[in-house]
Every structure is written in structure tokens, then in C-alpha cells.
Amino acid sequence: MTDQLKLTTPGAPGPVEAEPASGEGLFSGRYAPVTAGFAVVMFLTGFAALAVMPILPTAARDLDGVSLYPLVAGCFVAASLLGGVMGGYWADRAGARRPLAAGVVLSVVTLLISATSGSIWQLAAGRFLDGLAGGMVAVAVNTAVAQAYPTRLRARVLALMSTCWLVPSLVGPPLAGLVVTWWSWRAVFFGLAALTVLPAVAVVVLLRGRAWRATPLPAEDRPPRPALTVALAVSLGAALGQYGVSGWDPRRMLCAAVGVALMVVFAARLLPPGTWRAGRGLPATALLRGLSSGAFFTLEAFVPLFLLSDGSVPTVVTGLAFTGAAVAWAASSWVQAHPLEHWPRHRLVATGAVVMALAAALAVVGTLPATHPYIAASSMVVAALGMGLLAPSVTLLSLIHSPAGRQGYASSALQTTQNLGQVTVLGLGSALFNGFLAADAEGAAYGAVFGMLIVPSLLIAVLATRARDDEGLSAK
Image 1 (cartoon, rainbow, N blue to C red):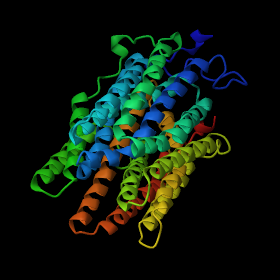
Image 2 (image 1 turned 90 degrees about the vertical axis):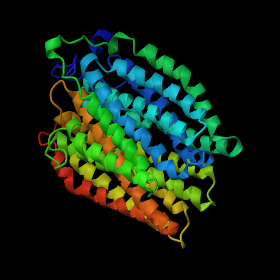
Image 3 (image 1 turned 120 degrees about the horizontal axis):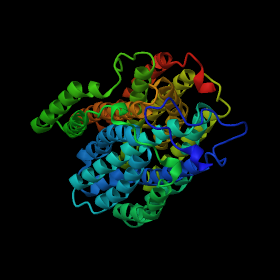
Image 4 (image 1 turned 60 degrees about the horizontal axis):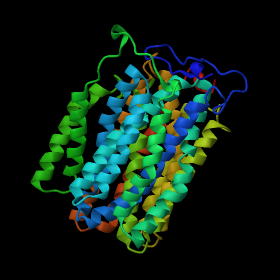
């Protein structure tokens, strides 16, 4: 049966098995090996990602780099852009197995680099390499979903991947918070490296199976090489931009100007034509991914910093906020794949965007002096409910609108706009935040950032129809 599970070779019109036999599911004999591989990968990456995020503000403070915290958070995103371009081309050329395995192994190495950080710059370097690995993994997984599953099962496998974050979300963030309280943030990185070595090896071994092998294309049929130099320039621009918005001195302002110039000149070359004007189909889905990821990532970056600055919120509570958000995302993703499976995908996108706008408004309320900071923490959970509806729907729409045999290209486009959106929105939020700090108005700084996030959320709701699936393929 595993021979029937081989991935579609790049350039082929679709999955080897166009539709499953009646009653076949994700864990049937035909799809079980690939599904198991996805589950292991998502559990591994979820545990590491959810445990690291709550401790980054503490690490930045201990390394005397609070002002550079946006750079630490943004380095991951900047590198993910380059990793996504590399992974998309690699997956289209040779199948999803190799970039997926490479990304999983590299992610373990980066944990050790971050754990041994002697300065904020080493921590930023560790996060940069982790972003490179994460970009390859994300694109490879999305490509493999298109190559290994028929249309009818794709929503369910995407929901499964969200569910695989459930256990890590219950254990990782609060445990990381306790380790930081009782020991140190370095112990979290070292512990994650030790815990993920064996799963990483298991993933590499599993991906060597025949179900993941792809027959190399003839040279004349291979997709064109991506503009890696362009991707590197955009990643460098994103990193410079994040550093530039960390202050208002001439050196930082020069870096910000150079970073913005690099992104303006080169970013469009990595995206489907018409992305910036929300052209119908793939360009619109790419833009929606960028706006949604930017809004959610910025909320997720600034809420922990706000809770830390308040001083009355224990680190473990910050971890529990991440736990609640991950559980909410998984639950919402399950809803879009089952009770709402036949809803038009663009309507799910619009609904999720409205929920995210409400979450941003809730975060603003949480910063007011008369309210408890826990209200701001709860905004992460509400925002995750919106993303659970929105993100899988955007991914499915992108696969539907992608050119035949170029799912790696479509996944790479989504990864690129996701990272550009995160860098851009986080950069704008950081500039706004530091502007208020320079004016000695820290109390209003957080509220201004959270209020700004309402704008991209509502814009998504307006533009969702541009990505509409007119043929109804997402429901088949």
C-alpha cells in the first residue's frame, strides 16, 4: 500500500490518488505513514515554539537588551522568509522530505546556540537560525499536504496539525515559566534541545520511507531557481528594519531606512504578481496571510512584554496565556474542519478577522489603569480563536489557486507574505511603542500598539472575497 502513497512528483497535476476510497481517512493504511510524520513534526515544533516565546522578554532583560527585544522577535521572522523561499523551491524540485528533515535537525542546533547566549546578539543569531529552520519546515509541510492528500482531506490534516500543538500548549508554556522562576531561561533552551533530539532523529528516519520519496524531474521540467539573492536581501532588510525601530538615534534610523529600502525594492519579486493590490486568487490569499500573521504575531509579542512590565503578573501566567491561545487555535481549527467544513472559505476568513479585531480591542482595554492586566492576557486566547478559523482557510484557498504542480511555489508565497506581514506590522508597532517611550508615556505605549492592530484585522474582513473559491473545490 505504501507505493500508492508516493508524493506527487513536482510538475505533476495533483496527488497520486486524486480521491480516497469511500471511508478512507487520515489514519487509514494508505495515508497513515504520512499522517504520522506530520503529527511528529508538528508536536516537535509546537513544543519548542510555545515554550520559547514566553521566556524571550526575560532573556532580553537579563542580557541587557530590552530595547532590542523587537530585533530578537523579528530575527526569527526575517530568517523564516529566506527559509520559506529555499524550502519551496527544494520541495518543488525534489519533494517535501528533504527540506522538512533539514529544518527539523537545524531547529535542534539553534536551541543550543540560544541557550549559550552571552549577549543579546547571540540570542538574536540563534533566533535567526531557528527562523531559517522554521521557514523550511512550514513550507515543506504545506507542500506535502498538497502532494500527499486529495482535496477532501486537506482541511482535516491541517486541523490535525493544529491539534498536535494541543499537548505542547498545555505543558510547554507554563512549564517554561516555572523553570524560569525556579532556575533560569537558559535551562529552558537546554532542556528543549535535550527533549527534541530523539524526536528529531525519529522524524528523519521516518521521512526516509518510500512514502516520502519523489522522482526527480527531468531538467527541462524543473521549476526555475528562486531568487535566493533577492530573498537574502529581503531578509537582511527585515532584520535591519527591526533593529532600526528599537531606538531613535541616527545609526538606528539609518538602518531602518536601509531595511525599508531593501524590502520595497526586492520583496515584490518573491510574491505572486498583484499581491499588493489584492489580485483575485493566489495574490489575495498571500496578502491575507501577511496581514493576519502580522496582527497576531505583534499581539503575541507585545502582550508578554506588557505583562512583564506590569510587575504583578507571574511568568507562569504568561505561559498559561500561550497555553490558552494554543488550545483555542486548535479548537477553532477543528470547528472549521468539521462543523463548518462546508462553509465558504472566504467567509471563515472574514469571520476570523472580525474576531481578531475584537481581540485587539480587548488588549487595549487590558492596558487601562482601571482594569486588570489579565484582560490583556486573555486577548491572546480570543485572537487565537480567530486565527484557528482564518489560517487553515487561507492555506486551503492558496492550494486551490496555486498553479498545477507548483504547490511549493504557492506555499513559499504564503510563507513570504506571512513573514513580511509580521516584520512590517511588528516594525510599525515597535516604532510606535518606542515613540511613546521617548515621550515618557509608557502607560499609553501598549494601548497604542494594540489599537493599531485593529486596522489590519478589519482590512482582512473587507478583502476576504478577493480570495473566494468560485468553483467550491474546498468543500469537495
